[in-house]
Length: 450
Image (cartoon, rainbow, N blue to C red):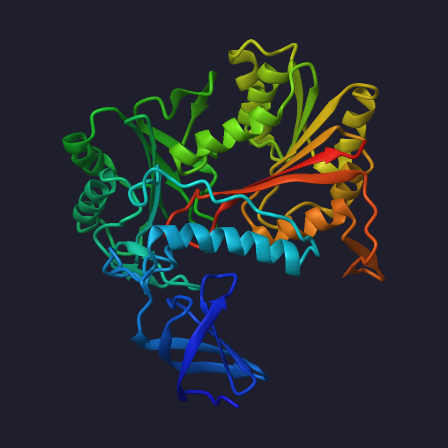
């Protein structure tokens, strides 16, 4: 039996869902971050609850061939990366196994998972920077599971331009009263930049704009006022101080406007590969139903490919953006946006498209789909279902319900020994949207049983 603050040695047998090593000692399973399967390590038990323990790595006694020196000096302190101690081939393998294990253990699904689609850049891939500013002007990123800032001057997974942002904001922060600055948020779109400075009250931001003019040619600058004490980054008040406040861009032949609060995947390379994979499964002549459609980017691509697409999105601002996108791309007769909850509107869309070949594309938030949405999709009779998920656990749950390997009994989900479903799982493919972290995007394709 392990005890708190005790030190132990053991062999790493596998990985937890967060990428931590699993070590079994005296009937206790310990989860220790920054270990690699096959290594012998020494660790300290920080927390012990029953037969589960959580530890801190003290020393690697027998290193794995896959162990590499982390690029970032604050790796292990900053909460942004989980896997910098692991070579890239092992990261890709871990993510494939993570999806496979989630499908098996959570969803009761025994299915092959394709190799993880790699990213061209292992570092420097992020097109978005969200940089918190501390009370005393320190810059950095939050420690794991906290809002304590780990101070740093750079970030290995950000593009090279991020170092210039660090330098300029740090210089500007020296001239501003302590506690006024909250965040600097930067979005890069094809070498053009959107800067949003979040402050507690209105300040003179011209000195920071001047500093950015030194290093950036094409940018717009917005001031966001957020006096609240919540964890929400942006407040409701915006002021455009430089440029137009947005940029026009194009993705897969779809023109769109992007602002500081526009959702775009942070990895240009993998975003393109993921969209291409979804569109490859979308058949011409079918009608596409895009659930949780956001700003309508994928809805527009589906409308262009299939001939007609419906998007359902509950956020009013995002739905308005989707309407603008539709008009800007000449899709008024092919793309139809509905503002509201998916569970409240899915039946209406099904009735409008009755009798036609239908494809459902669903990219829900990390918590997955509402149960009513899953049930409606299962009964829809759609010819194909394409699920896009950033969370293997909720993907496994939703797939289990669609495939009948999970069933609900007395409000709880249980595995079904004799699953019945109208659908067959065609493929499951992880995409490495977030190298160096435990996260990945996964595309699962289901076809109707004939």
